[in-house]
Amino acid sequence: MTEKFDSFDLKILAELQANGGLSNQEVADRVGLSASPCSRRIHRLESAGVIRERVVRLEPRALGLDLTVLIHIRMDRHTPERFAQFESVVRGYPEVQECYLITGQEADYQLKITVPNMDEYQRFLLTKITRIDGVIGVHSSFVLRQAIDTTALPLGYARAASS
Image 1: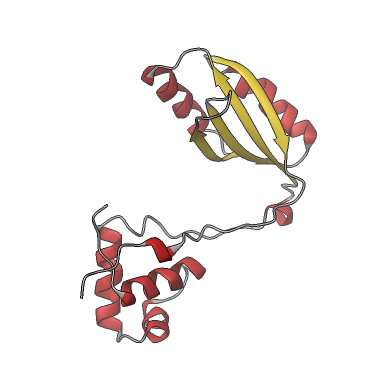
Image 2: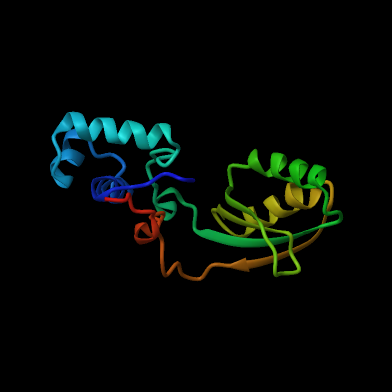
C-alpha cells in the first residue's frame, strides 16, 4: 500500500484500534479535530482499505469456549488449486478464527480454533479437518495461557506523509 499517513490519521487509527465502537464525535474529540474533517478522514481510510472492518471482540470463556488450539496441517500437494480448495472449506468452519499458509515448518497451514472442550476438539478434528481432501498430517498445540491478546497493529511503522 502506498498510503501516506499524517499524525491525525495515525491518532484516528490508534483510537479506533483501541475501541472500534467510538462515535465519529468521540474520535474527533480525542484526536483534536472537529467532527466533519474527522469523518472525512475516517471515510478516506475506509475507502483506501486501511480500515478493513470494525468488530466487537467477545470473551470466549464467557461463551463456554474454553479451549484454544493451534493446528499445523500438512497437505499432500502444493498447488494453488489444492490450497484454494482447503481454504474454501475451512473458511466455512465457525471454529476457525485464523488460517495462515506458512513456511519454515513441516506444516503448510496453521489454524487457530476455539471450541468448548477436548471432546468438541476431537469431533472437529475427526469430522472436519481430517476429512478435507489433501490433508495428510495434523499436529495440535493446546493454548495454556494467552499472554498477549490484541488485534492492534504497530502504527509506528506506518509511512508518514511528507511535510
